[in-house]
Length: 635
Image (cartoon, one colour):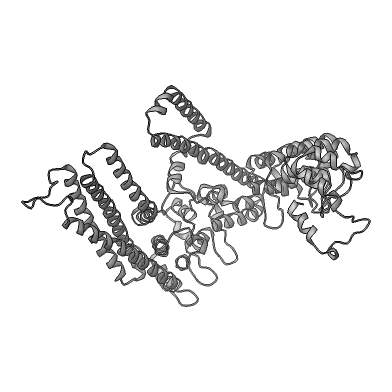
């Protein structure tokens, strides 16, 4: 129990804590409790009472040794207390039934566990009130080092798998998969192949546990654009190759930095030093997202293949059907296309599996908007449309399902209601290309065609998209109008004034030429942006307009706005350089350029992500289509 928890106990009215011989007051042990939490062994020795080794010092009946082990940092106190306690006192448990080894497993205190195991190794098999031994608690709380330490001592406990009604080892490996310890899970399955066909409870196998973790696969992680590009580019490089490359790059950078360190300190601009530092940190980032995650990805793929292989080799058709159906449909629902692909490769008839609503893997992919799973249809042969011809219990075909509104968690991944509507239209059109033409006019049990379903389901999103587009256009129109006003005034009021002949005083200066060109570009681009934003405000906002018409106008408007801001800052910088600088010092030029870059960068930081998302969504490559060579399944 934590110190704040004890404080709350101390603040309770006396009626809430009844003092009995079995439940003595905690207050005499408060100094000892605080000393253990601080890790002050001298204070622990000073506050030590005769019965402190066996008396609870928290409301949860934790002894001093429980608290010391639970801190994870007071192992010197653990060693001190173990020396003062008898074996029976070390065996004491708290109200949760946890002995000190179980507490060490829960918090991941390996050092304390080693000391306790050296004293009382039999604690490894003692169960708490939840019927869990320390090994299970370590796996439940995700402490890999603790699991690896306790596992060799717990084989006798795990051997209970030989009893048909006991699912001990299956439960343990299930926890390893949930925690992401795939290497440990692989070792268990390699040693005990029957785990693949064992069920923790009806329908729940180890393969189902993997299917519930789509985030461990690249398709299930939300990465930024450059992270996805980096991952795809390096997909064929081994982890050892990445490590070797990173080591060589780091070594070269260190030698370079050492040899020119004096030059850097005296002459290199501070910004360049920052740039080099960011470059080094970016390489470390590349290694972190590629090396570690790629290695975990390969482990998980291998585990999926291993489980599928064991299921096929140890089962008849009926058993294979029962063990593979739930994981396949679950993976399709959650978007783990790698699991779907491996199951279909191992058992081709799995593509025909359907749930109680007669939804197959591709129907579930469409319902939940998982394009990576749906793309597997393009790896089928020319008869792939046969897999999409079934109707569900409500008479809806797969195009009806594509007309439904996407789940909210999928919509939240896309910024802006207009982009969300655009993605909905893309989904519907791509599914429409795959299905036979007759599907477009089929009616479900409610007498609705797919187009009717789409229109009804997206009425609210169309209104939200219209409001979002108009809000963006209105805000940008105001900014663009101000820019146009400023640059028009600047064009009339020539910097430096005119001479007696009506000519600008600085017309021979290069900076004046730069001013004239930049001011003209800013004026024309801001005027064009105003027209684009006005066209958005006066659009009809039909469903189909969100696919190309409206996004194109917004892209062009934002681009012209960005161009006008940039040109305006260039014109302003040229004006300041002309009017307020007589000797044209370089430091003034650097200051003006730096200020202009800062302003443009702030604008780009706030608006460029939206422009990039719009451009990629409208003009970028389709997310649909065949992703890998070869055939996944042939009918």
